[in-house]
Length: 403
Image 1 (cartoon, rainbow, N blue to C red):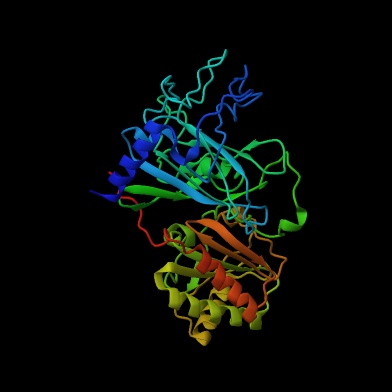
Image 2 (image 1 turned 60 degrees about the vertical axis):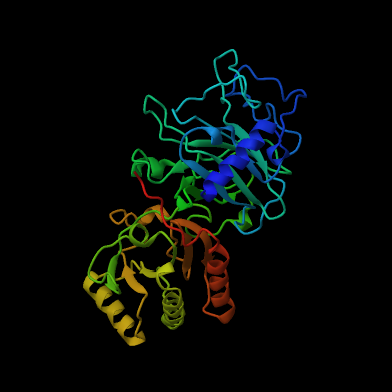
């Protein structure tokens, strides 16, 4: 009997007893009252349990379909401090793409006067001190009319901030309907909602860290926590195509994220203020780190100095640098500028006026960033820690085999 089958039996027993995770529906007002218009007053607390934990198993788990777990850490706006006591409310369609109602289900939500409902596949989690959460459910179906890709809705209620707010839906990277145009238009509320599954024992595991307040326009922002270059921790790295002057893809225009975005990657950007002695120190450290971590880390130097830009001279300059340093793994690449729209680098909002910008990513999502970062032992260790701490139990797992 597989591990997934054992989990299924255990959770089925939990549902029968209605006591799994101690999350039983409450009956107090206003928990049992539905608003007349969900757009004006979303029913976030309808039948909310009296007790909540950081893990929940939805009623959808018993449906016949692909079992998934959505998991991650909720962070404060800095993207690094775990946020405790954060309430997450989720709901989604059944495997047929319907917000089905089912009177026998304890969390069932009947339709209101306008015919609105979240159905019965819904639930809550509340983070502990470590900020972690996990939701076990079934892969939702897309709407029958094809108007939307498959998705899971989520609202966030912070411990000391009102009101609750919605975040970007959980959507799925392999969904053919999730086009580049749709990705670019995403708001990235609380960070990117694009899920890239890995598989273990038949269970699909999708990680998403949430950044409280990020891109939530109606909430005040901590200006000191918002850096002056690049997109923020939790947001996606957008695909771009620099010219590779040195390294594995020399002589081509290759997208680093598209080709090597599955495990860890580091993008080291330098714009109009190159400090070549510092650049050399960084490249030697990064090359050694990439050799140690092998296929699990790809590193790219991206030069975007718009002054005196001549492609052949820029290519020759980087080729010479790579040879002098005897780099074995790091790719040296360049662009006309960080505002270039042909390569799409402009989507990543790199500031050419800072000394440098470092973006560390995992599964094509930014997990750490540094601006004006000097090549010191202390900062080398910060890079190592960021990589080590995010290489969790799911890091080396493979993508699911799609039928």
